[in-house]
Length: 284
Image (cartoon, rainbow, N blue to C red; front, top):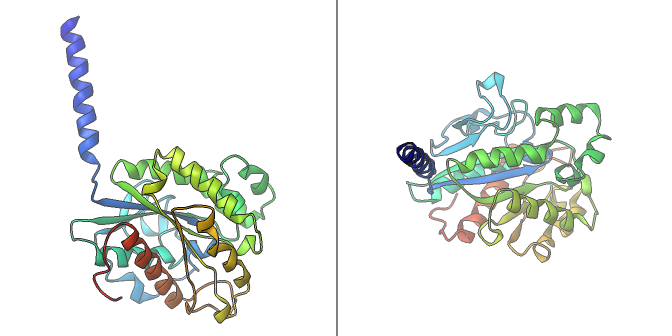
């Protein structure tokens, strides 16, 4: 009996060792969530499909049949990063800028869960169903691709990503559907706090970066929301607002152009790098 017990203990220790060694502390994971601009406006320009460093990866949060991607697996971060029908988004040039400025032994991984048109309430862990039940059929279809709960899918994929790397930050782009909602920062804090708890993270080690919506200088239809987004650091100490000033917007005044996404993504990275203790090695 003692021999068998010893064998089981040894097997357990070996299993723990395998698990520990499989996690690469030089694989930096970033969780991304929000609405349509975090999805990326449909369509990817040819120039954005090339020159993607192999150190930049994406964890498929859903199946991408058209791209041969399967939920829960890592792939080269060639856009789209969110779902097969989406496009270039801020996470694309965030990741590209990160790897070009980080030491060559560090990789970057993105987990992107976003739903076009949704209010921040959709990511409320407890009350999301009351909001989701009122969603239009097209939004319901997107929600269903995430198993009915985008928040739960983000946590599920976050835990899976933690087996391979370390979550270093969270990127948010949302607000258009909550324009002028002064309680938005508190709602975001509730989601952030739940992510920290559910993924066993430490808030002081996981900054939250929130991008502004299309700016007033681009005649943004929801530009008044930026004042509220800019106030987020007053509610979440380890958070930062990313300016969208000068980031080109589309004629719909809601979404960014590919050039706008590239610039906004770079700005997320240019804030994240020093927050994590790294210098920006080159001008993008």
